[in-house]
Length: 300
Image 1 (cartoon, rainbow, N blue to C red):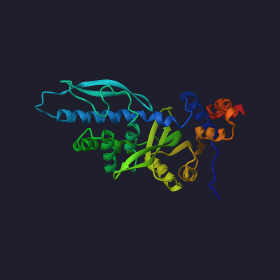
Image 2 (image 1 turned 90 degrees about the vertical axis):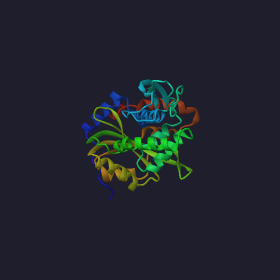
Image 3 (image 1 turned 60 degrees about the vertical axis):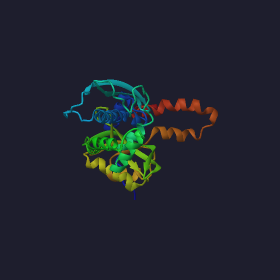
Image 4 (image 1 turned 180 degrees about the horizontal axis):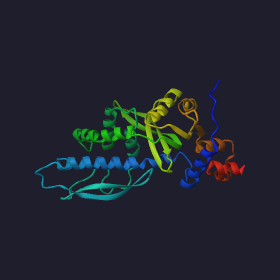
């Protein structure tokens, strides 16, 4: 017999409705938008390592070098996940030439997925180092790659293990597919991103995992990791039909509602609509799929 599910309470429905309405939470694509903080912070750390290499000494160390740090200059760059503002370190001689984001470079979409993969649990220190080397190519020395790895590892580990809130109204799970070099070979892997909306309506990326297979055991491991970091309750988990997710949610958070991702529901629905009617049908469908649950109920 299957596990008995406790119906979602009216109070929980009201909380979810308020969040959907106030913060315009509509699809799992919000996962990608929430990743931009990781991108900006990591790029800035890499730029600081490049400046250390350029000057020949780390910040706050003493040196006979006449050149030195001279503050930072903000720069806006474009990524797949919207525009990001980063702080680029400057030197007094003006000879510093950044490599991860060059002086006149405005688009970083070529490296964003590689940076996201650095934060995925399951990547070894060697794989992280290889990913950094892949980002830079042949532009920097092995020593600099090692220095950047050493600089980022504490930041990555702190992010992966930081404490979480006890309750999240909504948690989205989705996968981003990317290529990674492993033992000299390029492999396609899926990075599973766990995005939550907290009680203040702010989006937070809770965890990132490299997934090699979809199963109830794998999904349960991901959810148990959230519990170990302090999560006691989730009102709704929105997923895209991952194999084993239903069983994992029932085991880890038995009072949580599992909701199929709206984007995937729309796609599945449109499969049964004729090509000439898809545009009109999709416009009508959007009126309902982008409304909060409470409003949907009233529209029936």
